[in-house]
Length: 239
Image (cartoon, rainbow, N blue to C red; front, top):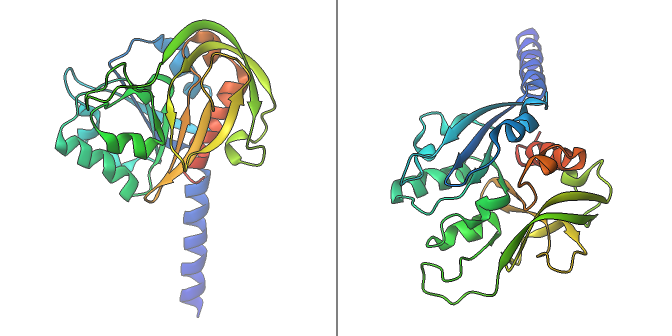
């Protein structure tokens, strides 16, 4: 009995330590320019996160070939690439098999136009004018330097906890598609912007969030945007 009690205490201590440690996060970039210093500052300023940055190699999605890919609590996609091998697809889908969280940000919704499964996994897509499957896509576009009113839709969702309606200076997209099982988190009344601005879903054992906001320094420094990013990472990582 004493041995069982000791083992139980050790297990509780281990679980407590795991809950207290910062989220181990992999941030994936490549294929699209961005202002790196203020972007990464979002994560540096969050004491609940430790992160590693992986940039795709030219012509392929090499970040998914990392030996440590499956050791992370969450993966952040801030890339915009089309090239992905069958092996890299398998490695990416392995994240969902293991329950590793996925936060997809801004232009990463444009990834992998010729891989329909990616659209299903992240819960939407921003189709290019003619995607590589030969389909004629809906009218779409974007506009920089826009003042965007943001409204909270899912007020009881953990991703929006502590966030009220706010305004952000950022880039809007329109013409993107959203999956039927994607749960809207935030939206906007801006007449040109697509809606919603963020959504959540589950894929396999993983939780997935897409956040359309996040183009430049003005957005990166917005406290409400930062709160959404932090909340999203904790939710997808089940912390």
